Image (cartoon, rainbow, N blue to C red):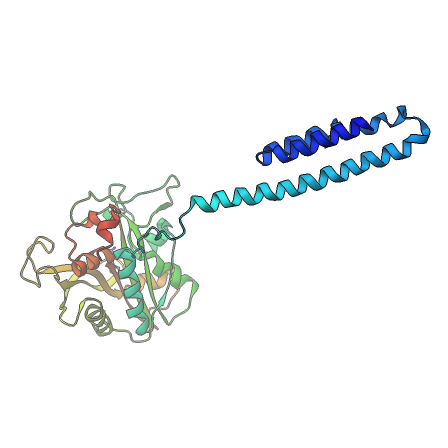
Length: 337
Ligand code: DAH
């Protein structure tokens, strides 16, 4: 009985003196663990004379209860103290750290603006993968075998020689026509890849927006009207548009589309190579061979198509003098636009 009392005094002292949750847990193990002092007392029960067994057992149980209560109370105290220490470490009145709000990349801004403008003309957005088949990128677009654009010097082919990194967004035309009957009116923004040596106006990867309108009796006049509307909406009402005859395998007739240079207003500068004009797009009337490749009847439908460089538009619009600034990802530079 005396031993129970001594254990009790020592145990309650140990609890009271425990200075932290770890220490308190050590006390719990010391007294209540499987080999702890209190279970030990219980093991003595068999050495106790029968008539005292009951009282002895009762005392050990009382000790257990008292120990557990003291332990729980101390634990609460220590937890509260720990929380106070954490709170005291923060000055809740300090102003927060300002994290600047991000800005959209100029390419993204321009793409979104172009989508909005063409949507008002009834276009919907179509999409295709960066990794394309040679068929979609070249064959179906009327590039015969041996066409210079197919050369490995200009195009990134993948290990499977039937696949490549698309050199333009035009293969989206093929994908869309193969899966949708006419009439269709789509734009397809996306990333393109070419083996170009980087300079102020060239980059090995860049962005285009493809446009395609196929229906009965679509004409070159629709193309002129829609692209002029786009130029004025995107670049301002004074933007002039110029069409020059050109050649593309997948359109006939074909044109190149220039917008007046925004940096110099048409007087001539480094960006427009002193011409006052910047080449923005290739365009034309869809070649009958393209319609045949996708199963459209060239006697029933006609269509116009265009592909324009998003970087060029971003550059003249924002006065960016080197295309490489768009890819250096200096947030301080890009956040200006
Ligand atoms: N795919 C051409 C290029 O990357 C641009 C182009 C020209 C697209 C004429 C067209 C088009 O849809 O009709 O240079």
